[in-house]
Length: 87
Image 1 (cartoon, rainbow, N blue to C red):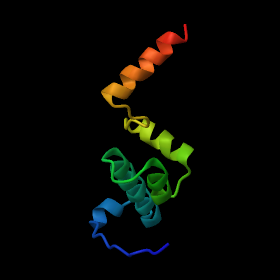
Image 2 (tube, rainbow, N blue to C red; image 1 turned 90 degrees about the vertical axis):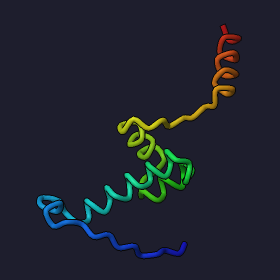
Image 3 (cartoon, one colour; image 1 turned 180 degrees about the horizontal axis):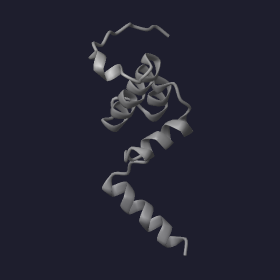
Image 4 (cartoon, rainbow, N blue to C red; image 1 turned 30 degrees about the horizontal axis):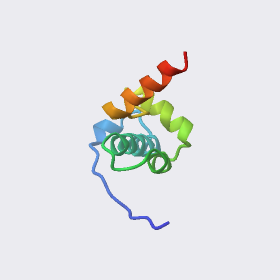
């Protein structure tokens, strides 16, 4: 896998009490979550980008109010009908 280095300027006051490595990890996680939310990355690729396994990443998504499972209206209706048929 090839990588590209990207630099970000951060105000020094933002780093008070925060380790740079922790900030970088948080930035990767939040970027991965946004990329997943906006369909730029799949769940697996976003988790990989964040440096987490899928379970950890799905938990982070849930904790931040981002839907892990996405259904279109049609898919949701079909799923509901299927579940009704199981009674």
